[in-house]
Length: 95
Image (cartoon, rainbow, N blue to C red; front, side, top):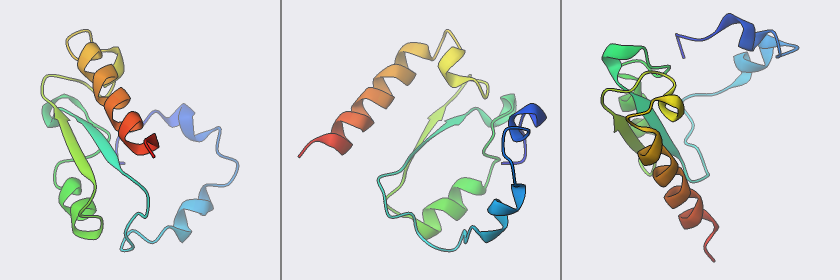
């Protein structure tokens, strides 16, 4: 994540915790990444989805064209965002 609000990181007591993350290992949990439009300031930069998919091929990438980083608060994508999250959570919690 190359774009972020600096104030967010003030809440993390020790940023060195991120140094231990091994991004070459696959995620072992259901993963869905909601990605804003690359032209409008997403947190996940263009090309990073290929890195994620290389290590975690079961991950789902959902692109929101026309949405800024605040997908959930963009009027044009709010309803789709809520539906996508609800569908993902329902699928993951179904026995």
